[in-house]
Image 1 (tube, helix red, strand yellow):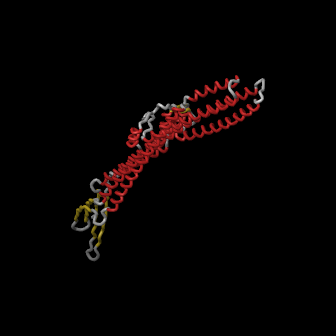
Image 2 (cartoon, one colour):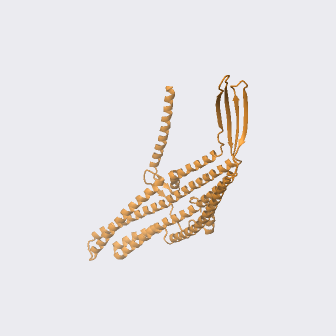
Image 3 (spheres, helix red, strand yellow):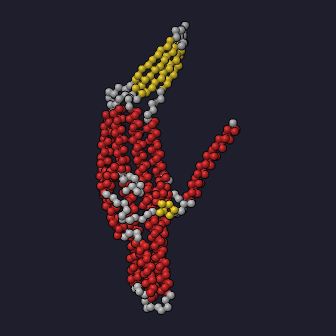
Length: 426
């Protein structure tokens, strides 16, 4: 007995060790990650989402209820022992044993129709799981591009700070001080302080965006997320084709349609509820105490007679529910059609904007600024023009990054509308 108990403890210890080993191995693997691409980020976020897992469990819950509803009720077994004593002279004691068993048998097709209601719940839960995956992917996608754009803004801000510090040193080290050099030095000093504050704010923003993103990724440290910048020639979309895909595949519409199907399944059950279930019973009564022993066998069926309650209100209620869910579907469909038009328009405008200020402008503008630094030092570029050029070039570069984030947002919305966050879907 002692050996068996020790063996059980050993099994428990091995299972705990295996579980902890897997967790430790996963954590060590995460520590080695330095860079992931956007597709891997979406996959990791969906795999680690507690929200998605909760809907997956809810789906399993509905599926098991559907299976359970197909079972018959357990039979009822009854045993009774009786003893009767007669008073007076020659009184006699009579003993009897009564056995009976009964089984409830639902009306034809009731079990299947009830199971169908739970199957509709299961289908709705599966759609809700896919919706959660879709929403998770969209949030990761938009956050990743916002994060990358802000990281690039931070790099640009630091480069800008370095440039102006070099200009400040250049002005201080000039042998011949021009009358307005003090004013120039003051302007540059103010500029440096403003850029330093901007850099601090961008560092904070990068940290915030990473923390939001890491809610989904759950990584032990900040990593680089590689995601391609967009070109205005990417992802050409035809509106009519898009609208057809949305109406065929939109998950919100599918979910609402599943609720309509559930209401119809409930109506089928309600129509069957007016028919009675049968109870089949059989039994035996054994009289073993009297001189003339006897055995009585019995059997029969029982059922309710639906004279008063024929589930009229229950049927009417489910009919109203079907109409209600259908109205919700019709309204939702109009909403999604309008949203598709709005998102498509915003998407096309976002594409038009990146055709005007593309991401390539960053490299181009940095080259222009590098040349401007040289021209200022040689005196061929006026100080005021230099400052105006700096402001304009950085405004364009920051705008280029904002436009990329906006385009990612609109593209993500389109993928969400068609119910599939496959980045190469359209």
